Length: 234
Image (cartoon, rainbow, N blue to C red; front, side, top):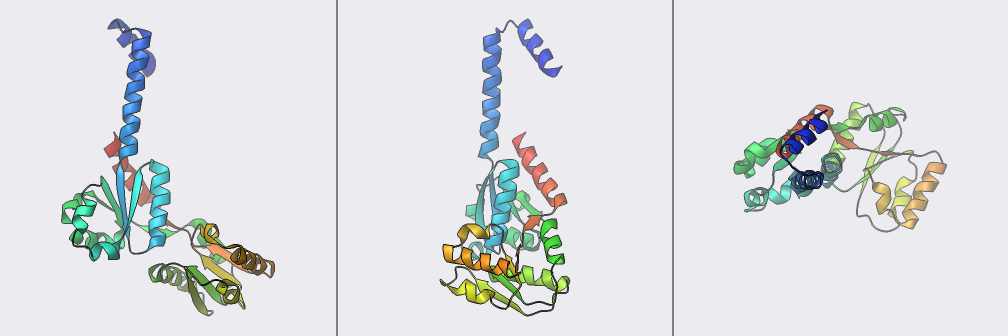
C-alpha cells in the first residue's frame, strides 16, 4: 500500500519508527493548521442568506466564514480593503458584478453561486393548499421578496402578510390568528420566547403548518465552491 511504501522508504533512509511517527504527526498538524486558517468572506443583501452561507460552507469545509451585508459594504469607502484579506469571497450570482465593482482587487477570488429553496422546503410548501392566508416572519425585506416570489411561482393566491423580526412582545399570537401557514427562516425556533413558543404550539394544534424556508447553495455551485476551497488547501 501507499503507507507501507512510505514507511519502507523512510526505513531505507535510516529513520527510526519514532522519527517517522514525529514526521507524520508534524505533517498532519501543518495540514490541519492550513485547513483551519482558510478565510472566506460571505457577502449578500440579506442576513438570512448570509446565515445559510455560514452553515453550509463552514460545516462542509471547516473554514472560517465572516459575513458582510452588501449594503454596508457599498456604503463603506474602505470596502475593498475589508475583503482583501480573505482567501475567497462568496456571494450569490445576482450580486457578483456589483461586488466585483466594489472590490476590483478581489475579482479573481469572488465565487458566485446559485441558490434555491431546499427540496424539503419545496415539498412542504407543495403539501399546503395554495389558497389559504400566508404569514411570513423574517428579518429582511430582501428575504421576504425571495419567499414571496417562490410562493407566487407555486400559485399561492391567498392573502400574504409579514411580521418582521425583531418583533414586539406578544405580537406573534395575534399575527397567527386566521392563518394556517407560517413561513419562517431556518433555525427560527432558537430565537423564540416562551410566549411565542406557546403561540406556535397552539397554532399547530389547530391545524396550522410551519414551513422553514431553507435557502441553500445549489449542488453544482456548491461543488464548484468546494473545489476552489480544496485547491487552496492542497
